[in-house]
Image 1: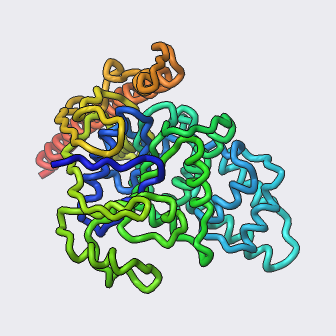
Image 2: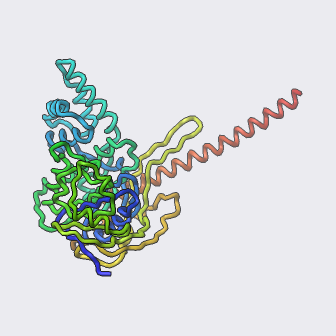
Image 3: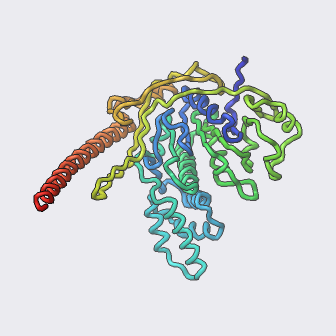
Length: 427
């Protein structure tokens, strides 16, 4: 079989129905491109957890003071589904830029004086949506700057409502944009791959065919970032005009009246098998068989731990963990998206909680891709080791609670035994 390579001169859009094989192809893309570029994945359902170092959203620190008021207003308006009057009111409230966290933002909105009943209703609506969707967002310890130094999967599956996932994804994209914009380094080549699952939730544009997310992704391209947009529907977005497209077999009759495709494409869709895809690049349509990956998770994934005792005492910790293992999937590929990796690594033991010795220098590993290296004392490694210590301390506390509960059970058994003896004596 002759390999088919897709150029990274544009963003890439992978389209197809559920269970068509998109996730398997994305795993292959992650395994291949992480050998050469920094790869970040916004994983909506936790499908790729452990393939790369994986973080829960609670570990990410969103520094709102780094987002200009106009951009933040657009992002919040999009993520929270605000209408134009509400967005304008929000901008009037935050335009002085005096905020650093969501608590600051909520406080500013709450203290804003309104003059009419309509303004009061808009203010209440903004507060309600913001408190509902953003109460646990952005308070982690891993900054966007640190996040972009190495490969990572951001696991959004711990967020329960779509508004939270939209908001977190939008804020991360905006923070990446400002990160590169502050550096001001235009990059003709590719330095960073961003994979966005369920992209239709971010690209559903307004009637003009435009959204703030379209703008941010297009702007990121000039800084060397390429987005891989994975969707089970064809988004109504102008961004598709600037993408190479991988299209899995789909029934054209299910596309709806809003989506128009050429007769040639309809014919090709009818001719292809379920194991094939159409690759659309620069007006050319090619039928190919996509790579299927069997990559297994090889990185520790620690999510929220919660232990409840009989007196309803709760330990509820967000444990954030990043660890790296060897990148050993397949052969090197400097051109595009080919080959398939296979790795079977067991991460058992300690209930999924790694020891410090398993944590490697993520920054050093990824800088090696670019021919540079950072020492063992890098800030990122210190954060990883600090998180390791937090995990160990948490496990010690869990063990202590288990010992207390075990002792309580023995005391209760003795009390019940004595109670039975007293009842027998009285009888």
